[in-house]
Length: 117
Image 1: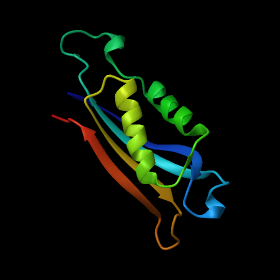
Image 2 (image 1 turned 180 degrees about the vertical axis):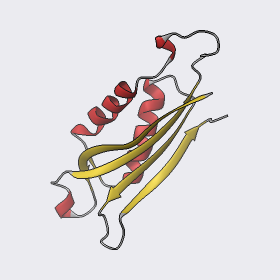
Image 3 (image 1 turned 90 degrees about the vertical axis):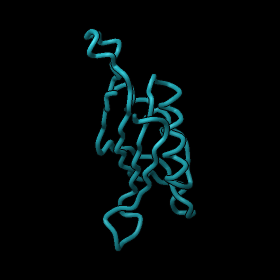
């Protein structure tokens, strides 16, 4: 089992439950870990590996024109999207919304789906 990771992927999207949030883009930060089997011990073939660029672009494209209320929903939808689109065994996603409350640097949610064994 191999783990691919992307740290602090910055995405701007429409997110929030308040009226003033529904018409603006806000920054979200993603930390993603993906478990997959590359069979790297058998042979080195680029087709057996996941593309950081393809994964990032899938996230950017999915969030581009949508509006969301909660980061919990975004995390769940992105996990499902990536599990459907790529051959992966498990995914961990942390989504942060910096500046959501004045007293904290960031708030967020962390989810895990699938298998990491």
